[in-house]
Length: 534
Image (cartoon, one colour):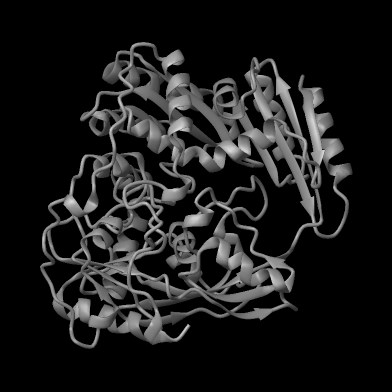
């Protein structure tokens, strides 16, 4: 596409207020069915459906800044465009949109056509002291893209930097622009029979740059799941110049420049390109689903598998509540979903050994299937529900439900105590703010030899107009418990502004001082995503 023809407007099919696209929102029938299930679980809850407001009718303030003539053609002041770039897609973001709140909007949305434009925009923002917030797909659930300050700001949307520029089939790597969305990235790699194999839940609506800037975790439970492990080198536009690291399989040459920018959330620079490690596309895939009567036994089985060196691509443990709500399966203790895949060899032997470990801990196989099987089972049901979860959350948010998640990680030795502390804090907070009308679920999204990454779900009955405040109370109580019990405030959702108070408690102070010094060196004007990390 020629540069002069690049669109400079929001995709009309993308929802400005909630997750995903307008055509994939729950239908009226699906929404009513969902409401019916909630009514059975929480009788008496007011399930009135509150429609999203017309964005054109909202009192969006005029921009406080005007672009320079050289940048005008890549800038948008359209009110709906600005609304769509004002927040991420967390529960509290969606609810505030449903209420028509228009605070903290970017004054302009800027869509650079190339890296030169990125440099020019940063120079302009530096000269005029305008805050610059990098924006990929806007799927942040931690207020990472929200300009939560009173000074003028722009949202730097990198959607036009969306190409796989170079493929190295010998080393199995590719040079890729940061603004490419997940599906387009895989489409461009497919002719080479290669894949990045990084599939976060936000895959369809998030970008490579966002994954890198937030240290995203993919769908696969072991092995190369974090984008960190797939990063060969980075190219970053900073206030001190362009940082380009060297392509290497590994290096012991001092602290890693890539590790500095991975997870920096746009506060240290704007990632424009990266070399990423690729894999051959899988040929063999097999899955098994196993039930446990006892949760502790299910956890022990999962730990043994994680420490076995088998490294399944999927090793996801759902507790009884999560299994029932999102997999449609009733179990006494837990549901373990296992999967293996390979481009090189059959995987049945690895799956057989993993099954045996589960059997040794009291597991019972419910189903198994290969790649080409069309059979429906709990793993397929859960996967479909997993993809649709954000849409279901939005439909429930419209009906005054508090539906949100928090994720963390801890070591195996402390999991039992940690899990008790977190669920106790969550249930106590739910009781305090809702009268006890809610449930807490848990699933392991990732497992490591030294510990799991528990992902907790909250489903609670709220009061329309108060659900954000209610969730904030629950979130605060749980976050305090996570830090007090030795967990991390986030395993793969990033820090943003919502996690910042607990991140400050988690990180060592000498490192915080070093990070502040790096911020001053790379962004001396302080315009890059103010309030994030430092």
